[in-house]
Structure formats: structure tokens, C-alpha cells
Image 1: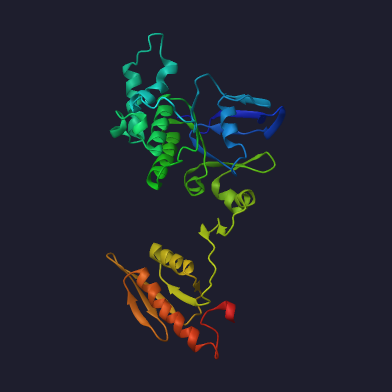
Image 2: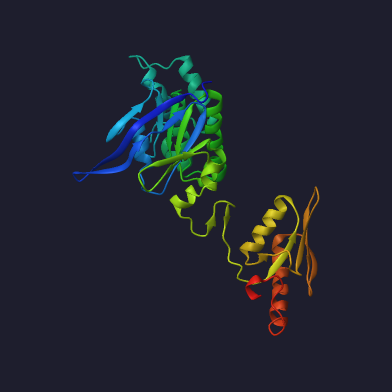
Length: 343
């Protein structure tokens, strides 16, 4: 495995296209590289030019300027989002086309070709689909077949444009984990253009982040989160990337003292904040998350309610009684417990 060896390199690369006789530049003077053994996720706002860059790197679109260095021909496999019109072929035939650049004049698949095809099919777990016609597939199944086709080309570089589009969560995770594993075990340089921010942050070795000044900022995911680069590019509305949380307004003006640990605590906190409560350790309303190896329960203690709840839904229902009690009994005396907004 040739880990960390540069396979693709650009020198002052500028890309774009002719729009009604006028040259539109999308990226300029890019000096970026892809190394074997790493998965790179390419991200940026819609319409910024991610697909155009991938097409240019793959040789399908001429650059406006600069150079792209790739060691040899047939070094790149590509998965785009273009529609397939020959939908009467079966899945195995589609995947086998990935071997066609390597065949001689008689277009006969060898044992090695069939082995690579079957290996690719197994990698994306579509064995039950191999004899189905393409028109019988869902969008997600077709996407998996296209990825398998690219894998059969057995190239050192793999470019994919939105490979997880139309896939459910399990398949999105599986595809990204498969690509990451391929980069590790086979030393491939893999570039994925994607909108899947959560998956990219957890699977990518590096991020290419397309900025609004026609540049690309590179870095490991965690650095780009902490230095605010993602916030600058995407300008999140109501989402805090550093915590991975959607911002919820504590509209109930009622603080909760929450005690617990582990993922049970985190999901309890999520439910409370989503439902308009604020986590405040000075509040007289206390919820204790009690977890055993078999179950989780929630003990609610307040002036008017003492209850042990078996579900978070039950807990939230009990909190409505607490909310009503404090709303009635504190209007003329003192603020709601733990409510910063009423202090």
C-alpha cells in the first residue's frame, strides 16, 4: 500500500466553462493534491462548482489554465450523477463495463475480470440485484451498482460525485465506510463530492472546502470545524457545528437540573431542549437519569410532581404539569425556577 504518496496533483489549476460566449471561472490557481491511502470529501455550497472540478480532474472537461498531474492513463475511475438510458441491461452487465478499458479486440472477460466484478458486487452488498434489470432498481440501488462498476476498474484514483444521493442512512454510512476502508487497504486516493456533512466529518481523512473566493481550503475535519471555516462557508442558520446541535429556543422559560451520564443523558438533554426547556443546574426541578444494564428510567422531582417515568415521552408529559404549576404559582411571587430569562 502506497499510503501518503501523492497520486493527483494540480499546479495553478483554474476551471470553469463558456457561458454564452463568456468565460465563467469557478476556481482559480488551485494547488491541491490527492494521496494514496486517504479519503477526501469535497464540500461547498450548491452551485459552487464541485461537479465541474471533478469532471476537470477526470479529464472530461478542459481546464481554463494550469496543469493536472496524474501518473498514467486509466488511473481514474469516475462515478457521476448522470442518468443511464440503457435501462434494459442487467446489473451484472452494467458493472462488467468497468472492465472494458482493459479488454482486447474480442471483448471477452477473463477469470480475473469476473473475480474483480464479483469482488466489487460483494463490497457494496448487492448480490441479490445482479440479475435485475436497471429499470427495476430504486435510485439508491442503481447508485450502488454504479459504485461497483467504478470499483471493478481497479484504479489508484476514484472520483465520486454525490455517491450517497438517494440512499437511506444505513446505506449512506455503509458506502462511506466502504470507501474509507478501500482507501486504507488498497492504497487508493478517493475524492468524494458530498453534501453529507455529518458523514464527512466522521469518515474523511481530509476535507476540501470550496470557498466563496474561488479557492479550496484543505484540512482535517476537526481543524476546519474549530477554526470556523465551515461556519464561514455554509453560514449555518440555527445549527452549531462545534456541538453538532440545532439551536433550540428555551421558550418555556423553565430550567431543569439534569443529572446522568452516557448516551441516555445526551438524548434526555436533546429531548428537553427540543421541547423548550433549559438545562440549568441551579433549578429546583430535578431529573435524574437512572440506567441499568436492562433499562433506563427518569426520576422527576419538583414541588408538585414526584414521578418515575419509563419513557422520555412520559417524562415530557409530566413536565407539562410542572410547567402549569409554576406558571400559576409564580406569576406574582418569583420567577420560574432556573429560568434565566425571568431573572
